[in-house]
Length: 228
Length: 343
Ligand SMILES: [Zn+2]
Image (cartoon, rainbow over all chains, first blue to last red; front, top):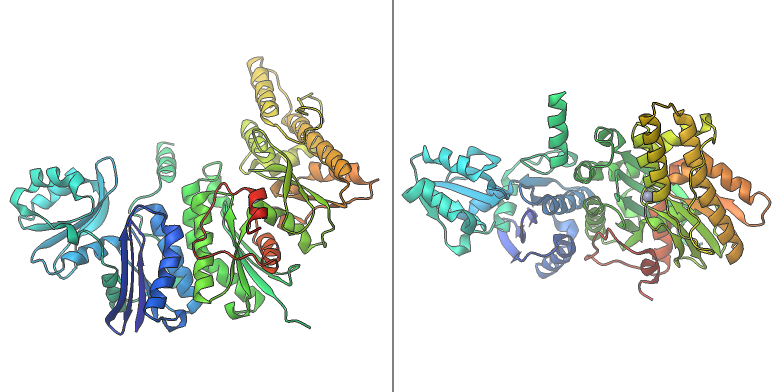
């Protein structure tokens, strides 16, 4: 099975081509540049480098959020439309799970997170086999850390935004918290491809972003309706 | 005989997810529009975040629907066209990235199209162009007079200095408490009313083909406000009729003058407001004695659709224009610059 995986859900642009279980090529950049301009040329390049023709692909994997709305939409639109035009399945994988995969040899809990401003984070809790232990959510880091304290077990933190939250993590969890080295904080696109081989694809048209929160305009409107 | 050429186009610049196929530049094969109006009605206008969300839910469904209706497969398509701008950036992004994915997966040429060029070319699905031609583009975001000497060349000879005509319609409609989208409601109400209020007309300097509607909009809002303060009742039909009369008078008079000055063979009306009955009849009236031909597209080609993007894209494709895989959504894309690209 040949799988193309893509992740543009946050600052990292990650691509991987896995052919019959072997990673044929991977591309990762971590620069704050426009995914819309860079994604398709990067796919074109990696496909050429690995001598893969579009029609040789059997499956497409995409990190479907959470993350930046724009980034998630670019990746999802590209993945869905490519899969649709090639008549192959597309598999959406959580962006948090792709990041958690970087800690999959760690004996303990794994906590991937993305900063979501104003003290909020997108996060979830995984075990070493990447089973979801605590539901992914968009919530205050302080509330999240307080809930992790009760686990009384070591937790590995993975995030590009670690520096923003390091003090708070240590304040709440002390020795319970393990913060990974710099090399581990970026989601692995090859893991996305491998995970997509195991996961049952959902119907293509129904694949939508994993937002974890609704847009502000809609939230306001819903709140107004409540009041009435 | 050369083989038939099919261009598939995607348009997602605002709140419609649209896909169309056009044959040999001028023949409409299929035109699918998944409208979000119902969803945006709740908010009384288009919410950009929600528009993008809907586009991503609709895009592959709309593509599939278009091919199914046309009884074709992607392999029958020669080139992919897409609206690259102007419009809402998040909405445009969905169409642009879908088009690139399609073009890459099936190794088809890709052509980026200017939304307004599309509105103009919608008319070519009905009638062949004769140059020079003048186009009056009126929509929620645009009020422009555009002169074309040949295919793909656009000279903006007049544009709005503040609000677009459609924008003024929406604001006046909101003041009159009409539902969204306001334009068609005002048009309907105006048919029942009388032009009894003398609203201002912004002619601007002598010889200018520019427009301005913010003064008119304020005058309408003030009039309604003052009447309310004095507990006076102005029939909303009359407000609608008088407001529309002012807009239509300025639009049709300036279009007529420009058509004369530039000696054009055709005058084309394009954009969502081209559906407006008041504007249609005023223009028909102005040009009935003239040699130059007045073209107003049928309703389904006035509002945003992808057939118009396919029509403009097919010409650009013939002229050799190609977009790369780095094509991006460009919310402020300039029409004149777009016309000059690659030259
Ligand atoms: Zn339009």
